Figure (cartoon, one colour):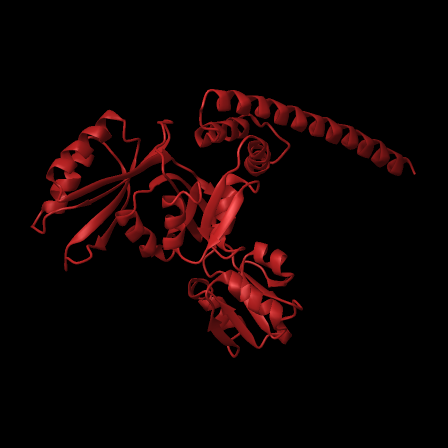
Length: 361
């Protein structure tokens, strides 16, 4: 009985704290609305992603526990997202349908209090931003086990959009079905990439079950929801949206499976001191030309974090190089190297400078 009284007393204290949190959330919302009013009168942009990232990073560093450090960022991103929605409405196009990993990346970056537009292709995401039907777009650029997404690279070459940000998430695949019982499964379906990432697990655990490709992991979840004998490899969000049960969690062959997503828009970002810059260039097809193009980066002490080549359309055996470098385009060393490269390259394009994001656990 004494223990029950202690628990009751502690729960009462929790209720008091919860009410205080609620009061402070509303107080924060009122201040944000005042900021929005001032920005509107001054004709300033309402959305400031750099400021939001600084707030979250500072709070993570200030946390001394016992509240889990890894929970600080997602909690405050949702608080910031909800408050932002009172100030301005952000529309984000993403590679759909709902419940894909790109959808999850959209929420990871912007929070859930945004208007989302699922698109059927990467090209449609770019077009939505280009035509100003969406403020931003979210597209995959590379996976840690499968490499780059060529459709995104090709569109960056052709489009006028800029890279405004990035987000990296751990991709976890779950086997989903209506019953949640493995013995009911006669067919397993998913996007080809997801099937490939779970190939060894499927061979070991369901060697005799039919495996079929679907247009997306979300489409596979929809098919599983309609057929009790079909299971889908999809996300936990898909399980929630389509009313499915998890047969087995995290069935990917490599647990360190991450995908990097780009945030695209029509504006440039100011320097934050923790930036990444992306450029595109092509060079003459001659011995040593790539070495000469990259040599200035080494001489200036600039770190290259990614280099990828893509064929130039209409010009066989000629290539465009996509390069990520640490730093901002306004930094003197990068500015000098880009000016030198632009003067010697057949084609040069600055795709964007934006804050670097670490892996999201």
